[in-house]
Image (cartoon, rainbow, N blue to C red; front, side):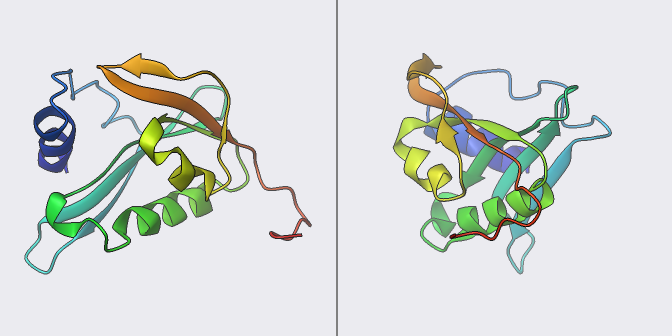
Length: 135
């Protein structure tokens, strides 16, 4: 998982940043991934729980060889299902904001640069009991 994160964020996107931030081993951290038959991680995301009960989705990535196969969508569906009754936030690279919007995330601020890449903060409110999606 760490190898894929470094390959995508540090090498491919040329963003030398401290990948090991200490949050991977927190008791409340959840890791989602899809691997191949030969045990290579093809896609990954990390779900953190903030002290206020808000969940933070991050480190969403797919290996070059697996892009276009719907792995990112599969991971996001799993993460959103896990936290559907709680608020969730993420910091989206702006090229991917429509992807995250398809899961109910809305922009909550202006675009900003993080490690030289345009980002925007997004939030998804909890699903309310008794509300049926699409109505």
